Structure formats: structure tokens, C-alpha cells
Image 1 (cartoon, rainbow, N blue to C red):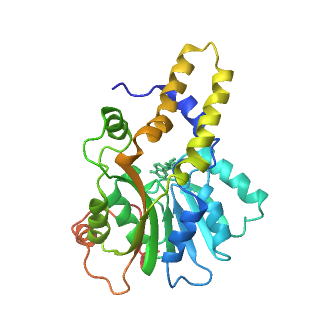
Image 2 (cartoon, rainbow, N blue to C red):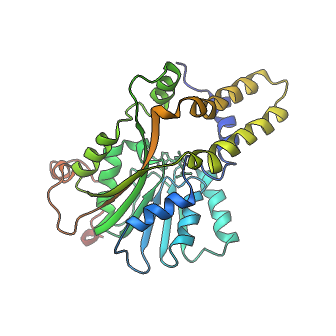
Length: 281
Ligand SMILES: C[S@@+](CC[C@H](N)C(=O)[O-])C[C@H]1O[C@@H](n2cnc3c(N)ncnc32)[C@H](O)[C@@H]1O
């Protein structure tokens, strides 16, 4: 398949940046995942990786009454939008934003009580992301993240093609559990996002936005074809969502660390993604 060109990305972002979220998720699921993160301090230090425009960042700020949140995303316009919402809601003392790469987040090692990431870790490879999170969490700290997983064999060609493009290494629930445990975490719990978490803040506003842009770009053949392409994703979900799911995982970095495969890899010379041990700073 051809790589999407600049016009595709221009219209893609015109759709996605306007949405409350850039992936499936909702407040109820965030609250349920948070309830699994036991023994957090009263004012936890939280890191939100791949925050997008911050739908879940702002909900976390409400759900956790005090403490700090650092929200990182590589897409500057999304961070600008989140920053505006933070100012508008008077959250500047608690929530800060960074345009950056979550593979190399430049945050002190072991400095977070909770790492949150909805629909984003896969962008840098799940195991790589888990290794980064393990380094950034203090022992006993929690990781809550969502990830897409297969749930039925033999997906229709359109579904397979869509995930081959967006998430070619997507696995099954057991693969993610193996990755979590292999990277030195204890799995605390997991649950599947319900269908409304795909629609309320994501696909329903996406379809509304696409309809608006069809008006704006009427007569523009290239833009209309791109909008048709973007409209395929919610349509596919309506027809074939039994083949795949988004799973919420909550894991904990154990207090007494056994030797995860990632730590072995680090000691064999794999660079630590810009993470500086606290003692060396
Ligand atoms: C599917 S969206 C999810 C956004 C948000 N967490 C949500 O659920 O609404 C994935 C996000 O990851 C961000 N992203 C992708 N690769 C990244 C990277 N290497 N570092 C930081 N952010 C990244 C994208 O810009 C995008 O905002």
C-alpha cells in the first residue's frame, strides 16, 4: 500500500485534533483502572504518555484530587490544545505538558508513582514501552495502559489490512500479559473496554467531524477520498468489532525487583533511552 501523503495527514489531523480523544476510552474506564492502582500516595506523581489532546489527562486530574501530572505527546498541536484546556480549568499548578518522544522521555528514573497511557504505548513497541515505564516508576508504582488485542481468528481482509497498517505487531491478550510479566511487572488486573468507550468520545464525534468536513471540501476530489478513507474505521468497527478489542491493563513494578528480561538487556549494553539514574544527575 502507498504511504499516505501530506494531504492525507493534513486532513487526518483536521479530523483527529478536534476530537475529545484520539482513541477509545472514557472516564468510567479510567476510574475503574485507577481503582486497581492501590496504595498510591495521597498526592501521586503521574506521567501520561502519548496523551494526545489530553482527554484522559483532564479526567485523571479530576479523579485524583491532588498530586502532579506530566503529560507527554510528540504531536505539538495536541499539546497546545491540552495546554489551553489546562489553563482554562486552572490546573497549571498540577498539570504540565511536554512535546516529546515517550521512547526517550527525559524524566528522572524511578520518579513516578503512576504511569498512564491510553492507546499509545504500541507506537514505540509494547515491550520497549514497558521497559521505559519500568525505569520511570518507583518500586511499587503502578502502570495503567490500554492496548489493542485480537480476540477472534481469521479477521476479514479489511480488518487485517487496517491493523497491518496501524499496528502490525498487535497480539492477543496472552501476548500482552506475557510482555507485562516478562518486563518485570506484576499484573494487577485487566478488563475490556466496553463499546461505548469506542463511540462516545471517539467514533461518534469523528463521524460528526467527517460530515462537517465533507461540506467544507465538497468538490475537492482528493479531500473527499481521504474523508472516505477515514470514515472506514468507525464503519469497520460497527461491522467487525468482535474480531478485536481494547484492553485496559494495570500492572505494578514490584517492591523487591526480580530480574526482568529488560534489566538483563540493559546490563548487556542496551541504552537506557535517555533515562539518567538519579544518582548521576
Ligand atoms: C491513539 S492516540 C491516543 C491519544 C490519547 N492517549 C487518547 O487516548 O486520546 C496515540 C497518541 O500517541 C502519540 N504518540 C505516538 N508516538 C509517540 C511518541 N513516540 N512519543 C510521544 N507520543 C507519541 C500520538 O501523537 C497520539 O497523540
